[in-house]
Amino acid sequence: MSFIEKIKTDMYKSMKESNKQATSCLRILLSELKEKSIEKKDDLTNDESIKIIKTLVKQRKESAEVYTKAGREDLAKKEQNELGILKIYLPEILSEEESRELVISTIEEISASDISQMGQVMSMVMKKGKGKVDGTLANEIVRELLK
Image (cartoon, rainbow, N blue to C red):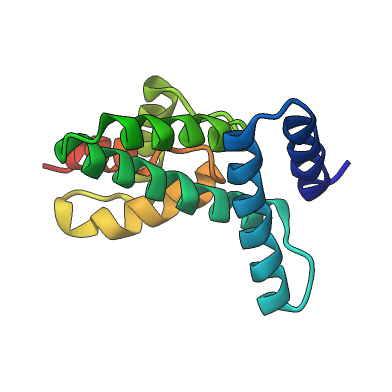
């Protein structure tokens, strides 16, 4: 079963269960995936699909923060629920320890010695991590190690 077929299957399941929020969230996800596929004029790879999901996850996190600051807990909770639905389709993220090991090996590999090389290190870490690295965590680790 392809990535998109799994999402469709889950959407149909949520429709049968009358889970309006999951259905709506998965429809939006499928719409985004279909739109990008049309732009590309070809099927999306799993990596491209995951990148789109990460974008939607980031949007939900930011929206939840804004709603929380504005005192709109009802809307913040809705965004958090959608965030949980979307995260199901992301690969498992590396732990802090695994991320630290990846960053250290990358720093050693390119012989980075100061913060001016942070861009190079982050670029390689993200490539090596293949979507499994939390960019924010990796950024903090790189800053810590390249002071």
